[in-house]
Amino acid sequence: MIEPFQGWWYAGRAAVAPVRDALSEELRQRLYEDPHQALHVAFPKNLQQARARWNEWIQKRVVVQEPVPALYAYSQTFHMVGQERGPFTRIGIVGLLPAGTAVLPHERTIAERESGLIETLQFLRVQATPVHILAEADWGKVERIVREALVCPRLSVAGWDGVMHRVVPIQQTGMLQTLQEAFQGAKLYIADGHHRWQAVRRAGLQKLLVFLTDKADPTLWVPSAHRLLWTEEDVLEACKEYFDIRAAGARVALWQEVMGLRHAVGILAPQRQAWTLRLRPKYWELLEQRPLISWLHEWVIDPMVSRGGRLEFGREWGSLAHRAQVEKAWVFALPPLKITDVFHAAEKGQPLPPKATYFFPKVMSGLVFYEEKGPTQSPA
Image 1 (tube, rainbow, N blue to C red):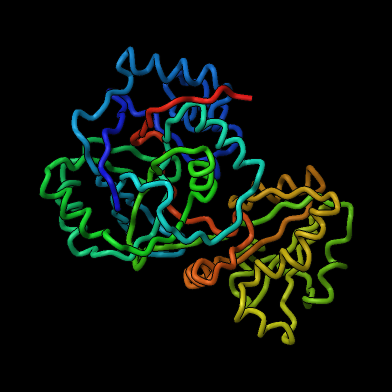
Image 2: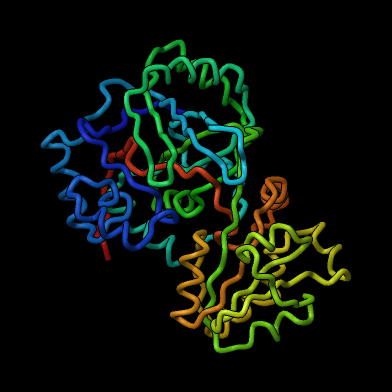
């Protein structure tokens, strides 16, 4: 199932980058100023320039190719908000899966974002960011090999969010065989990277770059993914049928207050008034079918978007609150999802709304690149 490959590495300084969801506009523009930055391949501004840049990197040995096929041991060391103990370390394997491999997604994608990735992949045929997949596998065998390999990482780099990323290739034939056997027949769930997964398949590529970790990992954490909504409609009025609406307190941030309430979300109005919305008891039984975020979208958010509203997603509460005030938008503060809600949505084939989850930590772009040979398609 999982396949080794001859990845491309930065020969010198590793100009890695956060994934798109973890990038502020300010940081994005600053990183684009670096001519060797992975963003030029992962999320290029200009496809023709990106192809020329990738070829130049190869010619000038900015990136070099692994001499033999390898799987890559990858670890993320991090702290979690609200946890006094730590740091925590998540380990896994970076490799390839056939693009048609059966995996279970848990959320819907956004067509516009997906189409941009498809065009990029069809033209460049280079994957810079692994899709994070949770696997039910023989992790006892995997962990022993991975931990031994990571004692001497080839690459060790700190992310902008305080996460330490370490990567090292595993090339020994016996170890590769053991790792492949451990994942044979594994049940796979997408954690992060739904758009990249769909784009690879629809771009006609044969292989998908993935980061496999343990589905039973106790450090799996799904922080809040809030919503920013621009609409001329009265959002509170639309919520009255389903929620008991009360003025929020002022002792803690709205998102923190919501975390302490049962079946609740928060709303910050354009005029800066903050409210808590507690689901009316007659609707509680619906939560046995789908989590609150799905019903909120069905009842309130999606209808407003269909009538001309505009929606964005984010995790940094301070930035969202500031934009809401300046740009006259509404912010929905959402509590973290339970990991069981994610698996339930995947197994039942009832995907959550787009960007419902924000798995932390995120993988980095540029830790290792995979280039798939074949005909390219000119950009539109």
